[in-house]
Image (tube, rainbow, N blue to C red):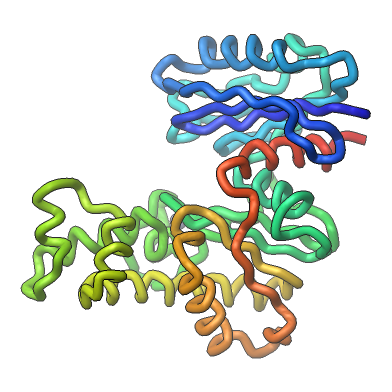
Length: 312
Ligand SMILES: [Zn+2]
């Protein structure tokens, strides 16, 4: 049976794995990125770990990494969480060292392919994948093909404008979905609430530690009214954003991942409710909206799926 190597590069952690072609994860190695080391040192450690995993019957390596990147050139262009990766020639270096064909995509597209082949996206031809955590990313599979668009910049679902003069987004635009419904956005709203008069348990918690989206969710579950407003508003925006994508793509299934997206049943329920109120031209009763399935291994399965999808 053929085997594939997979490499998932994140800002805090890097995972390497070896898969059988039927999707079985045989071996996995993870180590901290220590991103301050820069590209040269990090790529050396990656290569030495991958060489340990490579077997005689390994046919290709798939890579999921933070973008921006150029899939064809195989270069990575200074992702915010990987300082010093300026035109990093990742594919060339990996191909030279491992003597294998190497296929690269950004982490959100990789995760989308991972869910498509092995997770909650199995069995459909038209799939939208959205991950909601610190930021909001995603991937679009249309008629069985991942949409890359010009310069590999398609599928940036988190950067659609929801409010014309909304809060500033990391991308430079105002009022993006990511600036309204990501974990970072929810935490920002919580900090703003501290300055208002309404009583909230968040004021107590803020004295002990920096507020995050997790605190807002916890406070909401305890019945805190201010926290509930912050959370529900974010989920309303998320539902609007997902409704927009459904209207454009008309997918069979929408898979929701990420720490915020997977924080409870109620997230999916709320998204369905908002989508139901806003989408009219797509037969919404036929669109399934479901939680992602691959859990913490989504990055590694995603990287494997990139190789499986591209290697002919
Ligand atoms: Zn944006």
